[in-house]
Length: 217
Length: 99
View 1 (cartoon, chains in turn green, purple):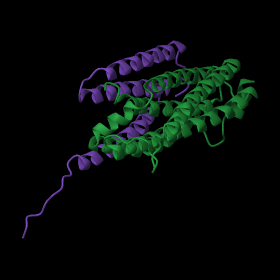
View 2 (cartoon, each protein chain N blue to C red; view 1 turned 180 degrees about the vertical axis):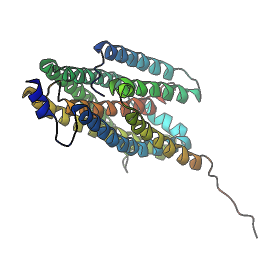
View 3 (cartoon, rainbow over the protein chains, first blue to last red; view 1 turned 90 degrees about the vertical axis):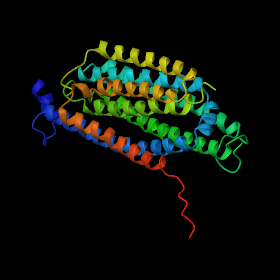
View 4 (cartoon, each protein chain N blue to C red; view 1 turned 90 degrees about the horizontal axis):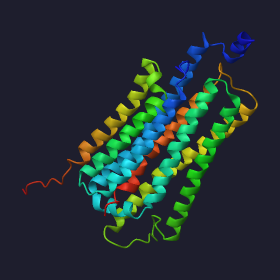
């Protein structure tokens, strides 16, 4: 029984399961390195312009909803915990708790996006949208507009990654329900977990850079 | 790598630490520390990211090769930011002497 499970879990190009897992883990990290540099480009642009226009960036940051940002950070940390617990359950072949933790992670991820939705809706309402009708007319207006552009570029790309992550989790959930994973074969769960945690890390940096620089004014 | 199953307790401790650091970063942002505000905010974010990478992403329990691949990504990010900023921060308008 155990032997046949190993035989079906092991792809023929690998010597053993350990090597197969290691290859999947490394492959995902290689992809994440490209993701680090993708987000890194926008972060570098942000750093350069913030160094040039610190007052304008503080004004822009002050107008973001500090509490919504903080709540969303907590939601993402919790979702990373449930994801780690899902990986743990998959490693031990506990199907029911794997399904439960995947569903919990998806719920928290969706909660994050719902908060984001309300934040964006509010920005549209008050006209804080870069473009000819940008509502803010106070000091440093063009540079504040630049900050808002960075806000939408960074949080927008991050939200897009969250949507992709939710899609991946939905596929895992279906596969887990069909009994696709076992203590022998669970690399898709581990590798998707890496992706989910990476998206969490991006937010860990976005939160202070976007929401907190104007807090003490 | 994932042959090593990390006890669940570790995940709960890390999540609790992350929540504490979140509270700390929100609290520090309320204080007016001048330029140190950025250092504190990014320092805390860096610690949080490290906790996620080492424990949630299990890099701490992975092969040396994984350490190098993950480390290389962040090292290159550092180069990207450092070299860009070395240009942005030192560039000033140069006026040529009149002939």
